[in-house]
Amino acid sequence: MVLAAGRGERMRPLTDQTPKPLLPVRGQPLMLWPMQALARGGFVHQLINTAWLGEQIPTLLGDQAHWPELPEVHIRYSHEGQDFGRALETAGGIVRALPQLDEVFWVVAGDVFAPDMVFTQPAVARFAASAALAHLWLVPNPTHNPGGDFGLSEAGQVLNLPKGSPDCAYTFSTVALYKKAFFADCGLPAGNPEGVALALAPLLRAAMDRGQVTGEVYAGDWTDVGTPQRLAQLNRSSA
Image (cartoon, rainbow, N blue to C red):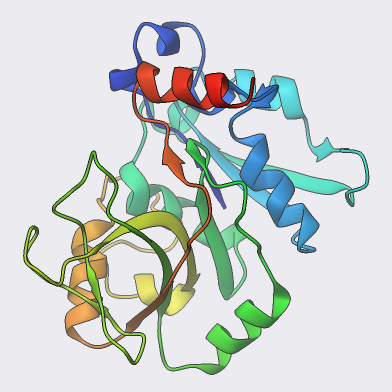
């Protein structure tokens, strides 16, 4: 699942006419980077959620994507904006799409640049065979999030720690594997028929406290394209 429903308030005025995942990064719309990386790993059935200016995304991509030297990608959509008039936040959007997703599925953000991320079938198999309900890729805390999001034990358990504590050394990259069971106790039925907005972080922290979230560190290039300045820096660095 590719998350592409947000308003992108901090990116205004760039996002007044263009959804943030379609802003150009190094020669192509930002969301194509994770979509192409997924395709490179053989994950060719992808679902995109939309809301703000969401009609622009299927207009660009359609139901199939063809990129040089990559397998054809089959695309489905969850149109939160059309169905409910707004985005449903991360967990609400995932639960809305849940009936269309496999028992184990990737979630990536369409507004994060992580060109070195490699999506593999063995990663899915290891996670599916584990007792964990979520597996997160973490990055060392960037300058815009010095207090961090989570800790990581030597055994690979993601830890719910107070922001700014010494061991809260990692920030969630937004790349993750989930099992449908992760969302079983979120309070919403699969399909989220009422269109309830629900944040993901509280669900993750509760699952961490139960020992159900594992993780690993992604050491490649990573940018949360959250401001016009970060977008400009990315495009300058490719020149």
